Image 1 (cartoon, rainbow, N blue to C red):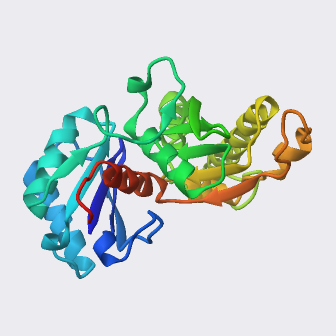
Image 2: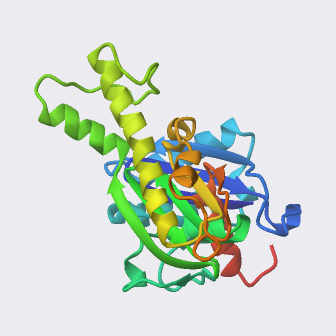
Length: 285
């Protein structure tokens, strides 16, 4: 198995994938399991080892089945802690996504080294598993739109405040508003404060997504929008791709692809990490 982990500011997502010995030959295998745990900078390596142990046991797996691991992290203070914990737990090497690892992705940005490894992992998954040109909409701590052209090149990003931080900022800045759960609203127009705030965050983010993608679509072709991230499932049902295409009809010159497909892939980062691992492993798994 290949064990993949993405360390985000709020959550650590992880998955195990079959290695080539188990029949995986094209990077499209379904994860053996996926799991999430809250990111906690105060936890020790031993704490994380116990977390991994519990997750593996719940899924009927043993750590010795892991042939290798890879980690992507946007939390520098936890990167080495979790990498070492993974290696102690699996007794197998763990790679760290970032400079020095091959991705097969051409990045057309001013400073490619500044792009988060989570966004790189998303893009690697997108160009290998979906049609391009594409936009990856990642709904996490930040809401990030990564743009990939028809040549499978990463051309740039748009970074917006995420749903969780936006909600916290609202409750902290307005004395009469308070912390609420990030749930889907029952109606567009809330009849109480909690529902009104939920509607604002969910519908507001969906409208943001439609507006950003429409503006990208005005400038270049898009064939696929891939929605991922911890909050993507909450947005998917409120997102209307027709709002993009109707407002900006396709033209033969600038938008030859016409209709846009919408995909939901909650494990896109982890699939991308698996592909990066395989590109950097000489031995046939």
